[in-house]
Length: 312
Image 1 (tube, rainbow, N blue to C red):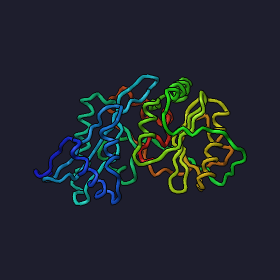
Image 2: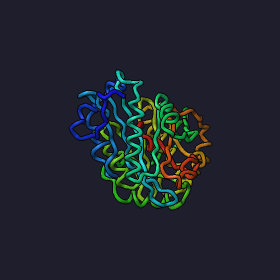
Image 3: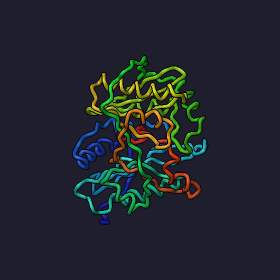
Image 4: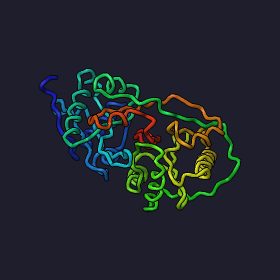
């Protein structure tokens, strides 16, 4: 790489340049508040964010966000890889690979055990073939359409002031030990991930001591982002009925969501003739600690939803 290139750590004063770099890299815009939210306001620790500088201009970025997975109910530190950027004038010069490898070195020093994320089709090749990531597949992507609401359901839309009862519900859900690996969805996580997101607007439905549902409308599709609560048949029925209620209210064409193929809700979903569709996202992981390799590389161990991917 030419001597005019140098790698530096992200600082708050780089926000304006990073915002501009995103627009140049993807030919679309994100507000500066999004990068402030992602890089400076996380309650889970300081992200590792490296920038590639060419002369005086920022032309590349790679970031890993700290995350703690619960693996067999034990908290394990790792990183979430997201939003790589390379200025189009510098594509093909090893920017992405150089930044990523340096970021991984820092992650190892911080005792990260793994790095995972959801790559798009453009970046998938680089992650798997150049950076040693493995792909977990398939993502179980489900679509429900042409379904009419036949029964009304009473729900409380609680998009603000998430109470600590959310943590209680999550602990109840987690205690069932349906899956070996999952991100802890307590009130702190829900508040940051959904209520404080500077771009997307989420609808949160809550029923005391019973369930917590999160939805997002995008164009004419309703995404079921996340759900947890008391595992009962009523819980699953209420989730689908609530989704159908919002679909009708928001004039959505269909409902879509990710859900592990071994999840008990599959029995309820099959009543609606679901369609399995191919996801444009690739679930990828890089193991930094061999101790967790066998568990992390098996997709059926994971509890995942669209809420685990920052693109939704």
